[in-house]
Length: 600
Image (cartoon, rainbow, N blue to C red):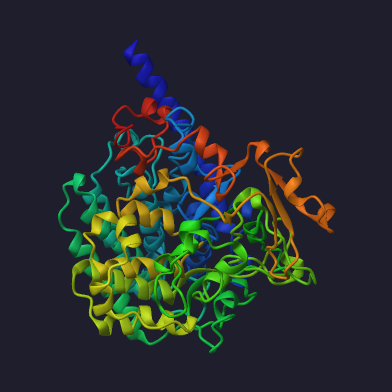
C-alpha cells in the first residue's frame, strides 16, 4: 500500500511538472519581441536548441520576466485602512478564516521560468558581458521571487534548476533554512548589481533598480532578525549595513533627486496621478500604463470603493509647525471639516480633504461615512477617462528615490549611527518637498512622542527610530509597504486594533465638503430623524443609520466611527504564527518532506 501511494504521488507530481513545462515556460518566449525575433522559426515549431542563441533571444525571454515586477496602490491588510468591505487575506487570517485546507499559493511556476533561463542562457553565442547582463536580470527576478516566498512562509526549498519529471530527489526536497535562503537571495542580488547594465529606460530592470531591491530586501531582513529574536539569528546588523550601503550607492550615483517644483500642495499628488513618469527625477523603476496600448490598472477604486483610510494614519501627520497633531488639545474631537487644517500637505494629497472634486466634476465629492470617511485619493486618476473600472492608466512607481532615502535613514537609525547629516540628506529632503520643518535629531531624542512610543513599543523609546518610522508611514502611505513594515518590526499585534474613522459629535447633519451646508446625516435609525427635521435640504442629505448594523459610534451617540464586523468578530493576531501563511495541505501530502509554516 505504501509503495502504491508513493507511486501515485510521483505520478501526480510529474503530471504537474509536465503541465508547467508545456503551459508556462514556452509561452514566455513570445511575451516580447523585436524585429530579429520576428524573422525566426514560427512559434509552433520553436524547439529549445533553436533558442538561446542570440542577444535577441536573451532579451525576448527576460522581457517576459518583467511582468513579475509588481507594484501596489493600497495598504489593504494594515493599520492604514479603517475598514474593507471584502476583507484582505490578512483580515481573513485575523478572523480565523484561513487554514491549510482553503489557502492558495505555493506556486513555483515563476521560479521555474527563471531557472529555465539560467540553466540555458550561457549557450548564446555572444560576449560574456551580454550574457551576464541578461543573466543578472534573471538573478534579480529570482531574488525577488524568493524574497516574496520567505515573507509568506519563513522557509522554503532552494531550487537552482528547472525541475524535470524524473527529478525525484528535488521534487521531494525539504525546505532550506531562512539563513540559507537569504544568503542565496543576496548572492543573486550581488550578481545582478555586478552585471546588469545601466539603462536609459525606467521601465526595465537596471543596475540602479537592482541596488534599490537590495536596499529594500536587506532592510527588511535586518530589522526582521533584530526584532524577531525567536529566529535565533543575531546578525541583523549585517543586513542593515547592506541596506545602508546599497542606498548609499544610489545616492552617490547622482542619478536621482526628489521631485520638487516648489509647490507643496500639488507635487505629491502629481507623482501618483501622472500619465508619464519617464522624466520624473525621483523614479528609479516604474510600470508604464497606456490607453493607446490598452495597458490599464484599477487605481480608480482607491476612492471610496470598498475601503477608507484610518484615523491612526491621519493622526500620524504632523502639524505645519512640525509638532505632533496628537499633542494638540482637543485633537480627538476634531471633526472632518477642520481636521485637515494646518497639517503636513501630504495628508490632503493622500486622504481626501473637504472641497475635493473628482475629475471634471464641478461638485465637491461627498464621502461615504459607512467606510469610515477618510477617503484615499493618492493614486486616484486626475484624468476623467481614467476614472472607470479597470480603465486607469496613470503610471505606477515601483521604486522611487524617496523610499531609498527612507531605507537609508532607517538602517542608520537601527544601527545607532544616524547623524543630523544623515537626516539632512534623506528625511529632510522629503520634508522640503512638503514645505515642512526639518527633523532635528536632538529634538527627536529629547522629545519623544508618547503616541509613537506606545504604538512602536518595542524600540525602547528611541526617538530617532520613532520619527523615521513616522516619516516612512506618511511618505509611503498606500504604496503597499505598510503590512511588511509591521511584520518586520514584529508589530503584528497592531493589526488586532479596531481602526477608526472620522469623529461624529452627535447624531445629526454634517458638512463634509467645506461649503458650510450639511451633506450627510448620521442617525440612530430611519424613524429617529429629529436631529435633521426642518433642515431645508433634508431630502438631499446622504443618510446613514446605526440600525443598519454596518458601523456604530465609539461612545454610543457620539465618537469615532467604528465597525460592527470588528465588534462582532474581533481580530486576533497569534504570534509568531500569523507572520506567515500556511502551505496548502495538498502540497504537504504530495511532498511529505515539507514541514508546515511556523505555528501552523
